[in-house]
Image 1 (cartoon, helix red, strand yellow):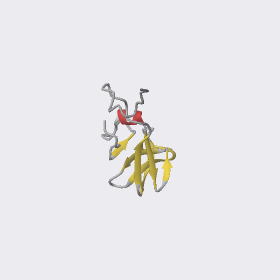
Image 2: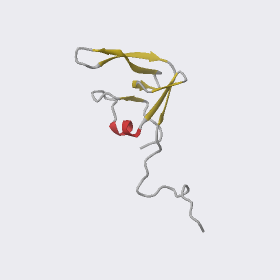
Image 3: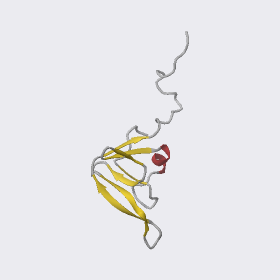
Image 4: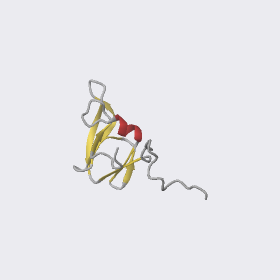
Length: 96
């Protein structure tokens, strides 16, 4: 898995942009210079996020969302998972 988050990601399992592995790793989102924790979906290249519109739900019980446009920055909330190979070994310090 790469150290860069995907260009577009959704937390809705019905979306084609849903990726459970990436979501379990954790994603941080900064929109217009402010960190957001309520993002339902984002697109970096198109410059938008979707957030829930209050407590409103549609007739199927799915939260109603609004699309906000602006600069979007995303990052992984935690470090990349360790591989079986042990990595490059530079981060380990061994006493001589």
